Each structure stands twice: as C-alpha cells, then as structure tokens.
Image (cartoon, rainbow, N blue to C red):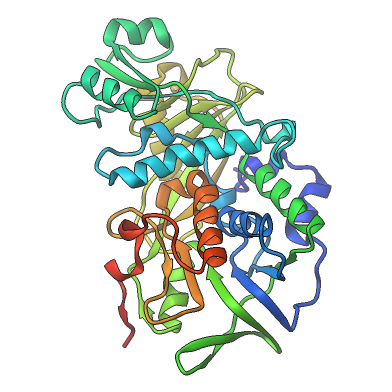
Length: 399
C-alpha cells in the first residue's frame, strides 16, 4: 500500500523538488523575523507579514515545505461545522479563514492556480453533534453568517441518494469548501520566494541562545541565526520546543490515518461528516479520514486503521463497502487539552510568538492565524481577541 499522501502523489516532479528544496541553501546570519516551521500556518504568517513589512523574513523547517500535517490531511475547509462547544470568537475565526481562502483563490490572488482546486463543495454533518433542535440551530447559524440548512430524513435521501437511510437528519453548510493543501503551500512558497523571503528546508534547530530571558539566536548544527522576532509554527513539535525555551505546554501529536479508494462509478453531491469524513475528488476517487489515535509520534499506517476508516465511510455510503484502496497516509495533528490552538506571545518574552495546536483545524485556520500574528508584529500589540487562545491558559515555567 502506498503511504505518501494523495496530495504529494498528485504533484509533478518539479513541484515535489521545489517543496523539498525551494532554492535557498544558506542560512542568513541575521533576519528581522524568523519563522520556524514551514507548514501552512508558517507560510501564511510569512505571506501576511510580507504584504506590509519591508524587513527581512526567513522561514525555516527541519524537513520540506508542508512535510507534516499540512500535507497529510483530507483537504477540507469545513468552517461551518466547527463545534458549537468552542467559543464564538473561535467559530467566527473559522468562517473568516474559509472566506479568506476564497478571496485568495480569485483570479488575481496567490491561490488562483487551477491545481489548487478550491471548490465550494458544501458539507453535510450527519452525526447529530449539534445543540438542541436542528432547525433552530440551523437558523441561528445562518443568522451569524454560516449559511446552512436543516435536512430531515426524507430530505437527506433526496439531497444525497448515496447516503445510508440510517441517518434521521443532517446539517448542511452551503459555503464549506475543499482544496489541494500541498499545491496551496507550493503557491504560497513561490510567492514568498518572489518577494525575497528566505525559505530554508532540512535544517533542524539544535539549540537556542538566550540572554536575560530573551531569545537572541538559534543554532542549526554549526550555523547560528540571530533575529529580532521568532515565531514558532512547528505543529505538535512546538510543545517540545517550548519546553526548551522554558515553558511547559500540553501540546502533542494525535495520529490520523486517511485513505483514498480507486475511482468509483458513482458521484457524490457533497462532503459527509460523521464517524469519519468522506469526499470525492474530480478523478472519482474517494478520500476518507481520519482516525484519532493518541499514540505519540507514530507515522506507521496500519491495517486496523485502514479498515476502521473504510468501515466508518461505508456506514455512511454503503456503496463503499469493500472498496479497493489506492493509498493510505498518516498525519500527526497538534492537540491541546481543549482542542484549540495557542496563538500568543510567550509569557515573559517580548520577542517569541507561538502559533500551533490547531488539531483538526490547522489547514482551515492557517490564513487567519497568520494574519493575527502578522498584525501583532506590525502593530506592536494584539489587534484581535485572543484570550481563548492564550499561552497563559496552559503555560507553566518548565522545571
């Protein structure tokens, strides 16, 4: 079974080579802003900052561009399905982020490449995870800008004939979308290179140089890079990196396995969200996933994981029963105890920022997270309500 993500497999050789080595080979000795982590959160932070900041910016990664969770997901931008248990400001962020993707995917935007395939696919939740009566919830969501519909069992059958009749109602979000995450990363990286942002890959951070509680530089093997401001966007690894900087954050990996079937003869109308997520690509393959396994940084795909995802998908779409698989892949999603990210300046630091822990919403929230950090750096203080995303809700001085 092939284990690279379907998004990586779709790329040309030239595209793959660019993600692995975008052109910069030497670390700068100094930079105004150093972003550690070249996933979508790091890339969007650099891109948003570059629009208004004339100083030097460097993005550094220990692997290739979007090597981690940003390149190993299922490509959904399901803002409308953000859990009602999250604070309203967080749910509003999700809608804003989805619409920012839509804006950037217009004809003159950096994500206008047809290969990014931004599509308003809609999303249909059928697992009953909504508060109270569905019609009232749908009405309240539409009023706050999340255009949605409450579908009865009869309406579900008409709306998505492939759906199992075991589901009694569904919550449909009209404006939710899907996209190609790696081609999105590729477009951003190319735009950054044209704007003289340094992109350094395959360069792990080995040590930090501190002075009077302030981070002055990072060490990468035999090289040192000093910076005025540091932004950590390293996903689940930001937890360990934070500890090395003197703060203990409960941030770690959750393993998610996903699958793609061979092309199917049927055509799905929308994306389905239940025990798993199910969507269909233009080439008629079905993508489904993912699992949630608290097993540490394990990137090994398993037969049990593949079977679980396919079984969950077939419970929603019976025509997927025993569907042959084309490939499977694993992503490690950064998780905090409350399921929300940390987007904040480190407590006690004036020049280290953290943007990580987005769990299943990383690719969705990447542009608005990048915008929040960029605005903060330019304004000198936070310009958004970030209290629910503060480091202080978790951070304690590391022992």
